[in-house]
Image 1 (tube, rainbow, N blue to C red):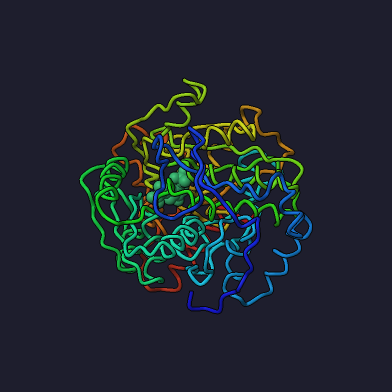
Image 2 (image 1 turned 90 degrees about the vertical axis):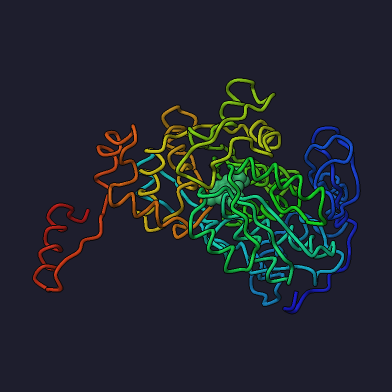
Length: 467
Ligand code: F0G
């Protein structure tokens, strides 16, 4: 880190370990291998020093001391404190040298009320935590600052990921900041131009493979076996540690009273796993007394987790051939499914799936509240409506939607929506026309005359008077 760093003494609580989620094999943290050496399953970071918060107390870091410390850091100009991830470094794996941290001042994202969306869904207290307000426009930055810093500490020259677009944009930026090279594998023709252009701008070596996301992941798994390249997909346990902090921030924003429900889009299922891990850890450490129910929403065409829960009770993954216009979550074999199942069970959350038309409508509704997001994020509102109808979410309960990506990530979708082209020639064309037309605002081409514009204004006021 070129910015002024902090010198923090190493505490007993800093010692973290990597533990396999399947066989339980444990080893001290190191940045090199992201899978279990015994059985090949995913690893997670655990903190034996916490010992159900006794370790934290011994280090003078009980719940109220932590809350105060994290709040105070908001007024600091120290680079680590300015980051909404590293501000919470007591609950993250420690680097041996804090100067290895690569930060773009990620995190510290806003929480907004969503009054219009709340009415549409039938709930009284609806909020969005907008992770699309991160430096590269998606939630990936919070995990990337952490995992990329470990790559730097491990001395790697190359980092790599397979991506539906946001991970690659984020990874390329963080690698560039640290002078590392980055390799991006993306499914050809299946990621948005906005995301692709970010990876190029940040200097990534970008390969568009003739396959889908799951195919890119398979190729990359082989590449990292053969080359000294550090894998930065969310199978990397350090990614999830950084992503945890969105949940910690959210709890801080609600004065450590957990909302009743938190709703997340599900793709590769790293994010739901990370947020759930944070809620459980915050409860273990005594920072909150109740857990929010964490629910995961998928597109109908990419519904591996929904099917896994409904058809096998979460015991065996059902892979699907993924197809959805919400390209960020077009994933058929989610890597972190076991972690996500555990979070659903531990928090009592639900799964739900939503159609393409439901996603498009929800996205327009989030836009109409003056917020906006990319299509994958809008599944949260579409899913909430269904959870309310099912009676799983009650009218008077508080709900937070995690919006994962910025509106500007996918302008193509938004333009097609407003021009009425999104579903043209598809089996949903008729349904889309009746449901979506009232929300469409196609841009008009007019003569350059004030009279014409005034007429448009008067017409708009007549057909849609202010409430
Ligand atoms: N929302 C957005 C905007 C995403 O980019 C992704 C995943 C998700 C939701 C799903 O999160 O995978 O943790 O369940 N994007 C990845 C990528 C896969 O490559 O950018 P998840």
